[in-house]
Length: 248
Image 1 (cartoon, helix red, strand yellow):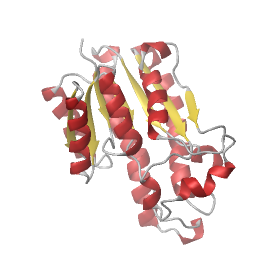
Image 2: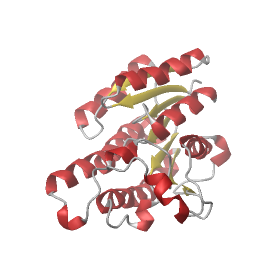
Image 3: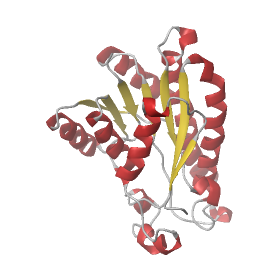
Image 4: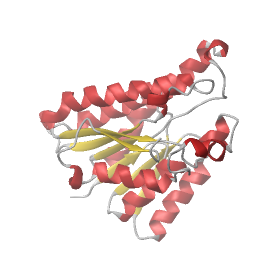
């Protein structure tokens, strides 16, 4: 049976690395993007040139209609989804909580929390053995920020990832008897262009001295942890967190 994987936010960074590695492992991959169609097409092209199968779909995961359309598109073009990586996420300009407004909070929470809920909902509806599915795996992207809080930088982002931690535990218990495993990865300081959105593209190099291993991590290192959680090697792991953070 073909293994169908959806990777949200798969046009760059950890999402792109996960899509490429998953294709090498034999998954048929659908990756989503918000604006970077060229970047998404480049990932799909890389996968095809390596002998894999992939497609990309534009979707704003904070919009329910987009999420429903995404899964329906995968149903018709690829088949029933068997794995989901909830990777799409945003952060905004660094600032203290006292400077944040409701619009900013709404954007961050809608993408990082609601988007993950909506995608997981659609996946469960298709995977659950209670609903006639064949089971499946969901991996959520949390962050070490959920544990560290990101003071003076992104407390809103950290709070959204704290919600993902709780969501992972709750959903894992909810669907464990229905053939679905739900786990999460908590990346630390990873070389990714998401830091530029916060106004500090050199953030990893600026803070790597705070990491016990004295270096930043790379998207491929996070992707390997994600692929392990997706694999049968993690068949007895659910509600589990893997920190990929250099000991931070």
